[in-house]
Image 1 (cartoon, rainbow, N blue to C red):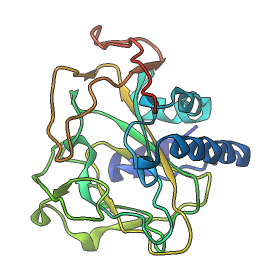
Image 2: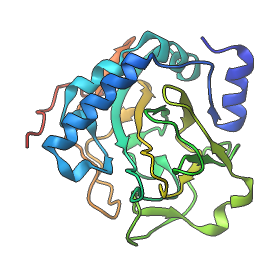
Image 3: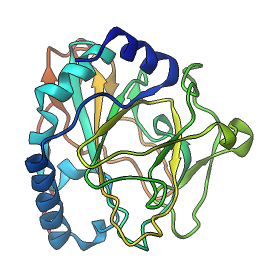
Image 4: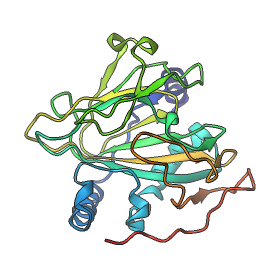
Length: 254
């Protein structure tokens, strides 16, 4: 469980590195599952935007009581998982993630999500760890983004440079098994992996069920439209909105 001071830090800074670590055997299992995924889908060697659309077994990692207890302290007891992604960043070729706010991509209304970022390998400045701008979430608004289709980027939307000061950024260095939590409005990025070590990270996206995953909204994001066929999973409590669609969508096959 998070302390009251940690909850306050999350609210103030928009992110938190809690005193928590996944078991070594869990990290090893995620690595094996990821290896199996890219054996079937080689296009995801660097980035898979929707793990659960291809292998629903990754859902097991989101059911961790330890993770859900912390998320509940931040967004409340009624929790839906709407996405899990894998940012792999292989050695020497891993891509850069431009400065952005996650909410620019997501058809969730009202916009609300706590993202859990799990370090599957050690993540540091040499292999492209996350970088956050503390407090950039406080206005609860999305700043202007533009499309950047340059090669070597994991995502196509980039914050306008006038919206932030990169000098304020902090590097989020994690050991394998550690996690970070961050808010949907927080500005963040990561550099490419130019080291000889992999930098794999898995995200779990949790929203309070006062929000709705709007399947009717088509959001152009530069490399296609948000996957409105993704499955939504109620992990705790009940659907307070009364309109979220929790029907299981077909898993995509190779």
